[in-house]
Length: 263
Image (cartoon, rainbow, N blue to C red; front, top):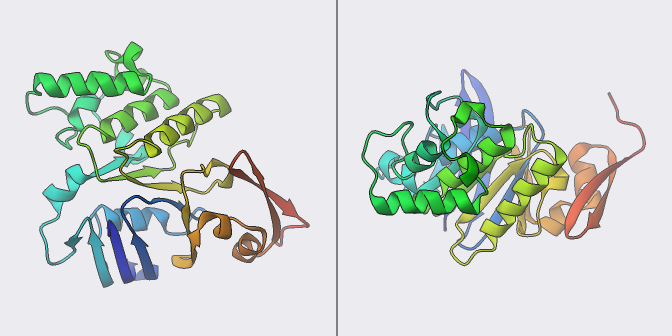
């Protein structure tokens, strides 16, 4: 098991953010974590990254159980995270190459001298992500799509066992989004691919590589299982509480509303 959540609940500032979450992810699986804004997706990610500890229940990530095993140093390099919250933490003068290199040490900024092998690896990842042309450019001057590519390259520097992609296409135009999704699909189909969790509130971003989906609603698991069963007419109509239709095209779903939305 890569992730084991059993009866997990989280209370913050006197309010239950997550309740009775059960989720098991095995090696070789790629999952979608789907939920609308405010569903608790960020809180769940913070649990997986050991930024939060559960109020109730058992959390075990990469065979380390929260409350029993040392976590911070171990998970820092074993989990790759691509999130817009990271962008705000980088130093404004760091260039793309330096930010990718920092992923080897799971640090914000470079405080250790990288080896030649690490430098070569960073260059290779920048090239694979299509970032090499702006490797020496200051991160803050990059477009949103370029920043996300750099973040993905950074997340792969330490060869993580779990890669979490937290709404990576947010703020991208159609072309940049599709280019980034193509990169993610390439990573997911690679022979040494880490287990991936793709977090989104957009149905049309779900790629064929994500065979499992967890639907999160108001801090609770609405349903989880095979993506083709979760992203289905009746399941999503019940989830949204409106009548919707799912149209599949080239292995990806498109959501269409039927009838009026109750306000």
